[in-house]
Image (cartoon, rainbow, N blue to C red; front, side):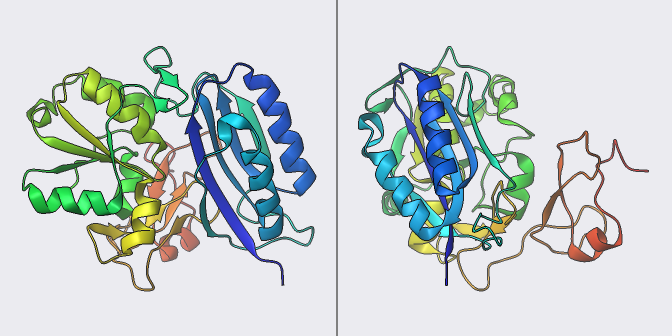
Length: 298
């Protein structure tokens, strides 16, 4: 029986011709029947693709055959299934685009990369190295590199969660002075797969944060290593039709429905087609009436 998987990856490396990479990636995915979202810029590539396991393995071989992508780490997770044509149920279509940034902080001019990755970013910590730092120091601060809604259903112990809806709001948030008291503390940034923290950690260092780390491989890699037995609590929001993923059979449910307050890990888009706001909502409330944000509620 065909097995559905989802693949997450990124790499920061100089690309002389992002458009040529876009055409290659689009043709490769279409030929293998894969769906997902791939962003390419002069700084690298960021992708999440889903499909049949065998097709994804062929994709990885072709992907790694291109010199700048040869050592890119691939993160695998379970998919929801395949449709009658063998396409992923986790993505509605294939989107492959060239952008100024592969993760949109609104600061492409600040980012510098070479063949080794981001220049001037935070110190990378594996999950085990993170635990080592926590054992040595009692002043370590987790700093969430995602948006505030993602953090509502899952986050690290005692994490600082900036009040942002998109990554483009981080620079103003960092420059607001609200986090100046952290500038002399060891700060560990974290995000879903690690890519947002590659940029965020560098932005923080450039703004006077002295000791900045980033969780290598993000929450995904940490969950694979420690499940729910470490410092992670709750579920991990993902930007596809799965909605969220868990690292054990019985994860803590820390989110609360914005309507009734019931514990839930469900996140939905505002039902207004023009709105992209995310909302935490329980099954019962969502079935009664699709979620609307405050601006678009009746």
